[in-house]
Image (cartoon, one colour):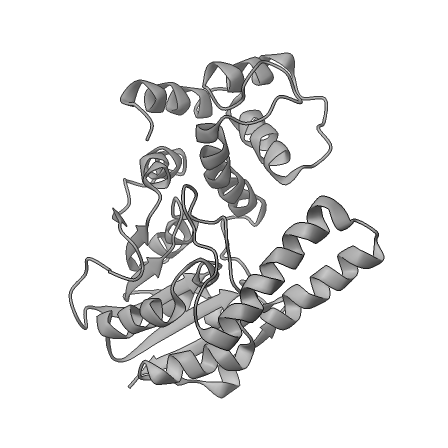
Length: 294
């Protein structure tokens, strides 16, 4: 958790002339991009905020800095997309006009970049995420975009603090792989009104396998290939047993599992969700599944 003093300092920094450069610097470090010649002032700012361990471009993140970077990276790409949803224009499910006037719940929402977009198109949104620092950053980033503080609640997707049949749409975008999939889908079904819509987007076992093969052809066995190989093993075990062999601990997005497309569809069906075949397809390297609450 960040103290109020930390939050105030970060808010001031992001609202300063160096704010955009700070977001870019933190995103570049988070993704392992070749560090550009960022100004020494922004590097010193990142260190003074406690995001990196010392005032050097190559300095590693602090633990808090790593978690903050996750939200700033998300915000960076949202800005790069011009405030659009991820895959908006690539699949009709992500046309934000579809959500106007609807009650929309996003599970695993992060700081709420998707909520920023949907709010601007007239949706009534709620977000849920287990990471409290994301929730602390949300009001700061929403204020940067001229929006009031969002309704984001700190809870797991497997136990949503929201009443039965209260939402028209539930979103799980890039998040389902970090959850107990059956439990999260059951909770999504519980909170949806009859006829309500679940939209999921995320990786699947076939895509992660192709990624590993591509990494191996590039002879990048360590560390990228090793990390992907461990994820493949975790995913295959989950596919066969329905159980995780490694659990997420300190950081919520540390250990994903990617089942097959068939596994995800069957799990939705078991929880009373009718998969809309015509709307369920691979987009890029991810599966978009659209299902209706029976």
